[in-house]
Length: 134
Image (cartoon, rainbow, N blue to C red):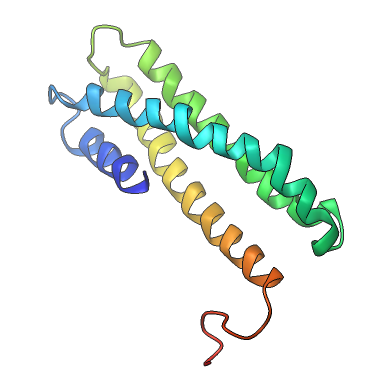
């Protein structure tokens, strides 16, 4: 998903008038809304409450929850741009904000995934952790 998101952002940055640009954005947005957002919502409902005990409190997942909020906000912002372009063409005045949302979402999702990995590793026994030299 991250590769497709980055590819769509790069396409908007380099060829915003290309005929495949808006369809690529629509496909990325569809996958974000159909796959990523439901996954994040399920983590909020099921995983994070279950992690509260092992991590010591529900505050331990608050940064992860905030990441979910930001991911949704950026996905919605991309969706807003797409809704304003039913003819399949991007307006030059909207490209900077669309790029900010696309590249911002890429950065937030990469950080979020790294934080999830770090949190999950903190729950596993020390033996066999990546980078522990064993």
